[in-house]
Image (cartoon, rainbow, N blue to C red; front, top):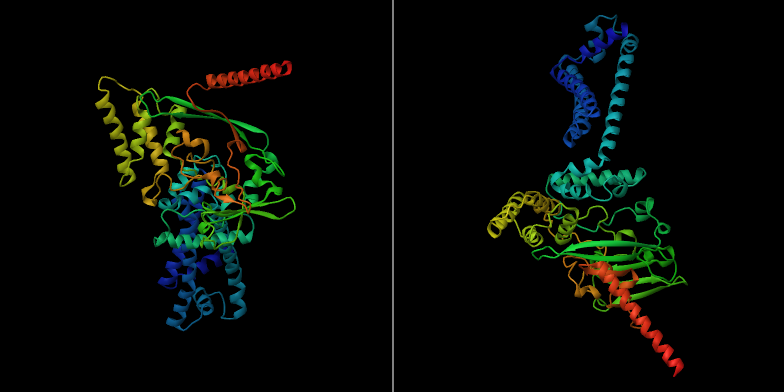
Length: 508
């Protein structure tokens, strides 16, 4: 009871003037509010980015501001009355003489306990803030305009369950400190509109792939082949379905060999230099030889490039899987996937063509775009098919609008092809130049290196053979089974003719 009485006396002492009253009220209110909001968040009543910002950032700052006011209150008291806090305390509450021993005996325990409580509170709030800032939701929604597009595509990506900090920050105090300093600059950039639109790529300060991708993926894991079936749709009235079937060679072969993941084998180190360090136009590529030396392939078109101003980069996972998480789709591929899933009804005539035209049109902003897409598709079918009632059309239109909404962000100047995906390749090269099922892919992908412009001293180029990475079982076929049977039949006929010809020569 004596301690409680002294505690009340000390709190009353803080109310000596208006500065002290404000400080106590502000600090106490912030202290209580923190635990109330924290409790409501834990039980799920409040769960939003803005609630977290208020709870873990604003309230602790208000609490500290309230504490800072108290020394100013005591200073004002001394200036106005000429007495110290010790004399005011002893005189006001008549706890004995003005002896120094009596003062510290009664005040120090109270001040000590309050100090411990304050420190624990600040540490707890700071720890909660650090934990909150590590959540993916905070990363994606705190700065909605800037990170909104990245959050939207991340949320539907194969790595949507992997926290952002696992790739963007890393482990250890140094990585944490570096991230928070960088985060402070990002906050300033967001506040004063100093950020790039769109956000520039590639991000050169990402952690090494071995520390991120390598936790779940490793060279020994990639072996054998993987059968991939791709469904595409023509833009004719029937939305004719086409099939492409590839047998992907996903091996990571050590030494000489082929396979998609050949590049990441320790014995097959590949390094390169690119124009402006953008990892798209290769100035030269070097491949480690068995004796530890490097064989260089130089781009004949860029041999005299003056853009080589960075250290050579050793190829790793993100050189091909550059959009492994923040995946922006291409319009035709996105529509094909939605049609294959049944989100867009393929029985609706010309739906592929009209949807493609609707989402690739330029609009002023997203709201007007989504409205215009819906109006355009609705109007087309009302005019061209007035006697037909397409019951699934509203659902299809919503799916088309969702594709646009996920991939196009005018506020950040993100359009189709702004962020090319290097996984695979576009079709203007090799055998794909005769086919039209991937015509909107925007990246050279594999052909950034596998092209005939990069040659060694003998003039020999890096192979661009299709069979290095996959076997093509069907390519844009409407009836892939019949295609395979025809292929088998032709192979049989060739084999049969060869057999009879050899037998004939033996007997001749």
